[in-house]
Every structure is written in structure tokens, then in C-alpha cells.
Image (cartoon, rainbow, N blue to C red):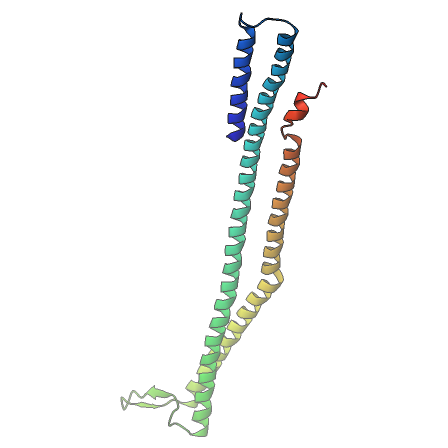
Length: 209
């Protein structure tokens, strides 16, 4: 907007000065002709300023698009990484719960085998309607079930952790590095273009001298 306002003001000044030189009150001659040529250069400066403003706006739009695209990519990989970390955390939490159930079943089995039923697990006796000690077979079956479940959870947690360390994290880091490189490359390109279309008012004025 500053460049456009400057170019507009310069154009108005050139036009009003031209009109003043063409009036009957000003004597025509070499001075008037020289001023006319001089004003043409300022008119070219106004065009140059307008073009500079348009180029700046184009640069702004391209940089904004680059920023938005990279921000979308950053958010995607951030969420993708958080989801992967959560899957591993959830798998390890399930593994710990399965281990606790397995340990509890093993403790019950040891108590049942050793005859210590004071704090061991109980079962509901259908005949008496009271709680009583579970049989070794029932407890052993529960130990085997919890053991299999624990082994499954361990395998799942290990596979999730291995995938996170060897695949997901490196892939996310590489994707973020690519985004950084894209920003650097885009900014470098825009700065190179900016260096090419900077307004050179004084060089334009004295280009013929």
C-alpha cells in the first residue's frame, strides 16, 4: 500500500507539472523540453513503483501459501506422532494390567497349593451357598489364561514400541526435516526474486547520464 500510494502521488505530481509546463504562461524551449524528458523518467519511476508493489504482493501470497502448507504438514505430523506415542503407551498400560492379573493368579495358586487359604481366592459353593476355596484346577486354569493374555499383551506392546522406534519416529523426523527444507528453499527463492525487482529510482534517473 505504501508503494502504491507513493507511485500514485508521484504520477499526480508528474501530471500536474506537465500541465503546468504546457500552459501559455510558461515559455517553451530547451528548458521546457528538458523538464519534459526529466518528468518522463519520474513517470517511469511511478510505473516501476507500481510493479514493485505488485511483485511484493505476489511474494506475500506465495509466502503465505508456503506457510499455510507447511503449518498443515507440521500439525499433521505432530498429531500423527502423538497418536503413535499414545498407542504404545496404551499397549504398555494393557500389558501392565495383564501382568498384575497374572501375578495375582499365581499368588492364588501358590496359596492354594501350600494350603494357606486364609487370604486366598474364594469361589461360590452352589451346595452350601457360601464362599469357599477354589480348586487347584480352577486356579491353574486362571493362571494359564492370564499367562496367555499377558504374553499376547507383551508381544503387542513390543511390536508397537519397535514400530515406533524404527519406523514412525524416524519417518516423522524425516518429514519435518523435509518441511524445514521446503521453507528454507521457498524463502531463498523469494529473496532471490526480491533482489531482482527492487526499485532503483536513482539508477533510473541517472541511467542516461
